Length: 420
Image 1 (cartoon, rainbow, N blue to C red):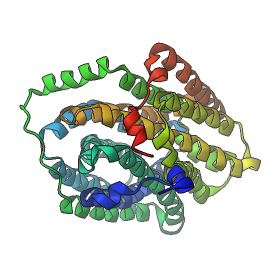
Image 2 (cartoon, rainbow, N blue to C red):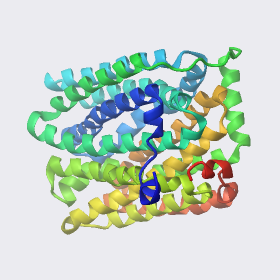
Image 3 (cartoon, one colour):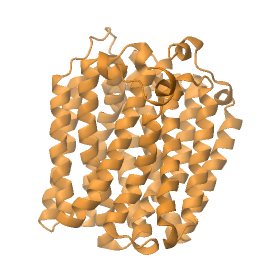
Image 4 (tube, one colour):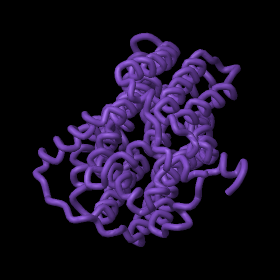
């Protein structure tokens, strides 16, 4: 690619050159789109049952606790076993959770406690699935293509967020909540087939370590690699304070008065901005000061959330634009953070460090749902969103002062030159 195409469009080389990466990518695209229907339907279902943003926020607790407790062990397992086989197991488990949601909802037996329990069970499987998938993907491409692979992964995450969220609003409005869960069940078949067909390269022989020793080794590596500690901490703090997702049902129903279709658009708008940022990510290959880029991107996220929080029903379209800008900035941050991690960490530790990273990446927004719901209950929904965005911006300043290595970090010149 040359000129503006090279500057804007993502590098498709990983998809062209690696059949296994292509299979993993396509299967995940379909399954994530299906899962987004569940991620929209579940909070909406709880809001309809309770009318409480706090109850919606509790979803985050039931997701975060298993993820935080089990993700480290998931990383240890991912470093010790055949990652492809482990992914097959997790796809079956996640599909089973969605099947239970579909059956219970269709039968009228979906109580709030049951929904919380199924959320927690799904989070347990995700604690195994996420670090395994994140550790497997870089092994399917050459080292020079890792940054491009990270950008392509962001593309499918955000496409799934957009397409799945819009589809969720339509499906819920026309076929009910159970219909959304059934489509999620069907989507896991694609992920299972894709993982079944791919071939992972043989891994170097490693000595099997006791679980606790392996955990300590991964944590110790994080402690001495301060750039990773900075990027992970920043992501956790930003998403803990600045994620307003738990309040979307409230904003759709009580502020913007747009119903389930509008709720789907609120979720989709975040993915739309992120998708644009991911698709137009070619320029990221030329950025050498990647740590500073992460700081700027997170600050843009926080400021956009502050502005979103003060809008009323006259500015629904502007609200969608601000959410798109926020998640676009977060996607840029994610590309740089993921590239830094995958290039620095050796494969023998990749499962454990990816699991720790996932604890920060997923734990922040999940616990943030509880935080935003609690602040909304104690103060007000608008105050929850605005104060969270301001705290996100403050986190940028705090992390930069605590670990100045993130400001000074530069990508290796040969990695930047490879993009030319």
